[in-house]
Image 1 (tube, rainbow, N blue to C red):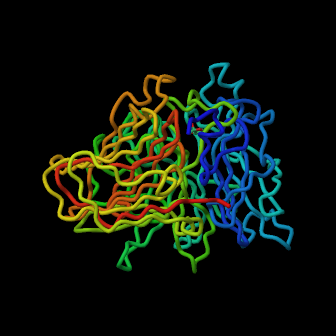
Image 2: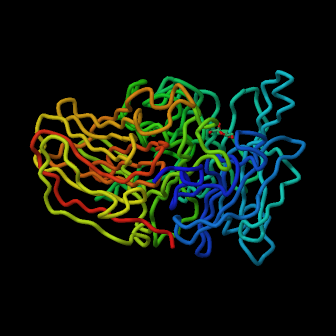
Image 3: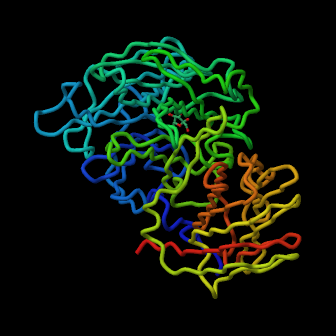
Length: 496
Ligand code: FRU
């Protein structure tokens, strides 16, 4: 089926704005059965412009309903990225005694200051909502954090630190993360800084997140700093790395296993090119206990030029993050949230398919592959290459696979459809290290018209990329030298 217009590119079960430009997810919180997602939004055009916070709500993080704009720019500036928390105990005093106030914290970006060549045009501000996030009132005492003369000074992410009974906020400041502490969400004190000379620094650090996580299968707890940067991502452009360590209420100390972490490390939440500025939901109830994450499915290298016109950019599928430890090494793993399974319909399964040369595995007569979750396994990996492809009836071929010689995964979108809109799109094959030593490889691919999210080894290595096929994806094939593709399961995803 030919892709006629950008409505055909629009994902079916990933969040996209009804119209116009979107970038980072912002202010995500959960309250009274509703997940809130705010996002960097320009309502008057399909490229980046004066930033607003758009808003959407969902009961399951999959099926979203867009809401009226939540925050608009004013004389202090554009509304850049930030976070929100439900202030259950009314520590801020903004509450009216009936509903818990929702406090949003964001960066004011003053375009006039930037034009005048000042360095201090980004400040931090707050707004509160007394109707569970529907509408916000900006605080009259803004900004609550002045700029000390740092050009890139933005993206406050607030976490409730129960251990030290305080609010912690992480902020990106040029090439490091700043940690601020507050009791009331209004008065903030700088407690420490982290990151200079540690990890990847190919660009400006942006959109941090800071969460305490339980190590899987033990009672150990660690603090994890999620830190996006642009450029300098693993495969170029925007990317998100993470650091594991401890927090004494003021200072974040990197775990010993990560000491001397240089530019070329393997601590990336996602190795693909299209998962940026992602952060986690606040106020997830303790009885749920999950760390729930969503990122922006694009890359600043080409985000403004991707071939959709009426809307631009989608979010990743919501993911659950877990922290694992093997030996002394901590790793973050991510998987699509369980809620996605609610929407899986028709199923296609095959126990064993022998692959020798290029082999067709399924096509649109079996099941619709353009909106689906594809899972399979390969047992007893051999020193060879394993290739898979999603293709249309035309010449669009999206390839991905694994080379067990180099222990590397890849995605190749160079032949997957439109690429000419930007020189950094489809010019290179994206690679990712295999972080598991298991002899069996498990693969899960979430495909939604224009995106593929690959979860290898139960989410130990993740790669997310977008692509723009000229005709819709109809075939799934594999190629390699005599191996068995086991337990194939293709589930169609349908959002009613
Ligand atoms: C990250 C980012 C943030 C900033 C926002 C502006 O993608 O550059 O640092 O707040 O986008 O829209």
